[in-house]
Image (tube, rainbow, N blue to C red; front, side, top):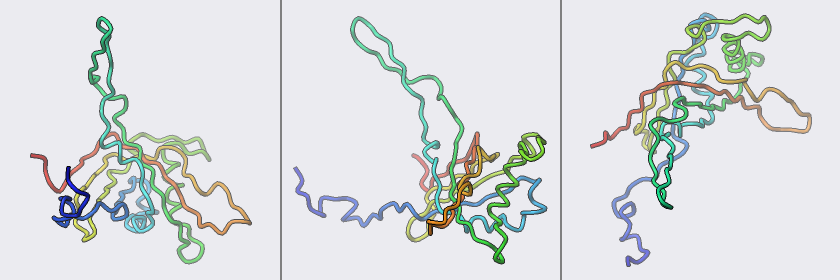
Length: 194
């Protein structure tokens, strides 16, 4: 049995770095219908990102199914997965540009009204409410990207959350949460599988 000493740790003696949780960037494209009014903010919304959840969809596997045979159990992997869609949740900081322009909120409010506008009942086709892609780059402490995921055909999935209540007794900053869905993506690792 190896003693609990740094010399018995490959990560320790080989100076392997840990995997940080806070070194990532997200880049967005906007649906064509929003570009005239919000195109100048396309790069700026990257600066407002605080957090992303849902990347575990990249590693979803098929569930198992079982059969019984004379008191024993045989287990198999199903031939398909229950859901092949990625649902991502992104938290955004909200800053008031020029003191009054809540541009991140305005942008996502406008996007949420592309598929179905709750104020008018107007509807649009899928091609009109999709953005081409959203890109997530994950890096090490030196900034070297080790995973690069490009989600294709991005749509909003549900209401824009975080601006539904205000409280005189709170000093908290408002964070906007937006959910996105993508049916397909490209996931590239820095080190290809052998």
